[in-house]
Image (tube, rainbow, N blue to C red):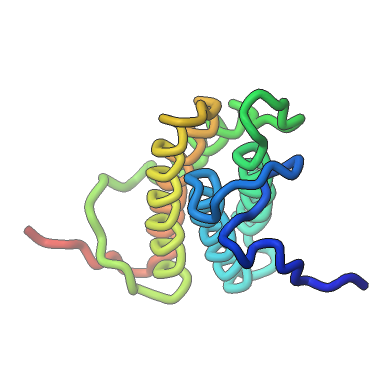
Length: 174
């Protein structure tokens, strides 16, 4: 087995797909770092769910789509990433949000009703950070609008899912 470390990043550079070397703080690297953190948070959430939980499979599918998105972001401009995000995914998230929020009116909530809800809220917050980085990257390296929509819906989905798993809602009062 090869070594995990390569020492090629010791001078502050890393590689995009295809080997193009860029600064480690390149907006595409930063964006993928935020998406990677979101994916890790979803992994924590998944470990907290029962095996038979219907939403567990959805979250695992979303994790794969986040990896797919990272691959697209890491593909240099002008090269076909050979992967695309389907607009069906955005529509699916919208349908799930509608199902999860049929009897709820939007209100700000204080995370911490239970561990699963709190981690989902953390994932939602990290998703918003990743979305902001995507928009920053988009100004320099055009990003497929489906990806931008996906992250906007994903954060809403995570919010609705967090409410679903909270036994009691602690609402923020004005």
